[in-house]
Length: 157
Ligand SMILES: Cc1cc2nc3c(=O)[nH]c(=O)nc-3n(C[C@H](O)[C@H](O)[C@H](O)COP(=O)(O)O)c2cc1C
Image (tube, rainbow, N blue to C red; front, side):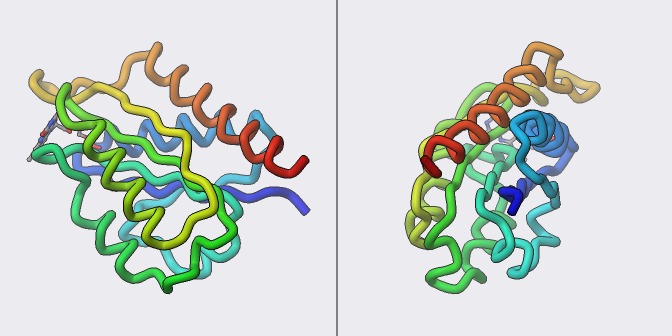
């Protein structure tokens, strides 16, 4: 059966969504099934049917958006037991690593099997109009997706 991944993003002005969509490209290249969803609309059945969960957030005051915390709070204790986790953050320049730490902590609290890979992309403030992720960053996202796919494959061996 094809390995499935679920990418959940928490985004306010769209950058984290763009990042999620480009991570999806890399996972697809690595022959992994992918679904991309706003974390606010994630359902337990989406999580249960996935082998890999990739979760990312915009950075607000050096924290993940509150929808990330709410999502994890609603998950049953063992919902992530046999799953691989990966995290990503989009920041304007400060605090992305704190968001990664925060998401990793939630993953670990819910008993995820592995949560090694993470990615930080810089976009957004301080410039207006909104500074979108650059081509070079979108490539990083795609590479990150491929890396997650490879991690899953080596875990199966
Ligand atoms: C209320 C608010 C707080 C923010 N706080 C931070 C911050 O602490 N550090 C940072 O680097 N960027 C911060 N940003 C910038 C966003 O993280 C950045 O614009 C990001 O690209 C937004 O992602 P999104 O388009 O997915 O919402 C903040 C933006 C807003 C609107």
